Image (cartoon, rainbow, N blue to C red):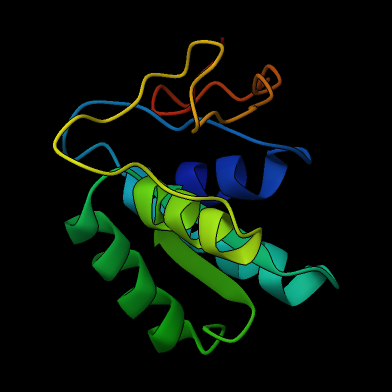
Length: 127
């Protein structure tokens, strides 16, 4: 991690963030550093949600290497949703069709829009 990436990771304020950028721009590195920083500084656990299994495994390995695996939970979005269904006793989708998130669907997720980020690093979303 270069100095600028480290500064961006430390400067991100509280809340949800979307980190995006081209391949090799340091997104995973910033995410790993930020999760470690939060795990060491905060009293609450840190949750990282990924879309792909590969990146989730890579981040899990990074958290183990940094010694914060007990304070940082890395999950794919879909495995987290499945865990929530089980936790709250909600029947999940059955059969080959997957329900949409329109009203009346047995599966719906409520999300909050990420806050704007003031960092200038191109891999951090500003929307």
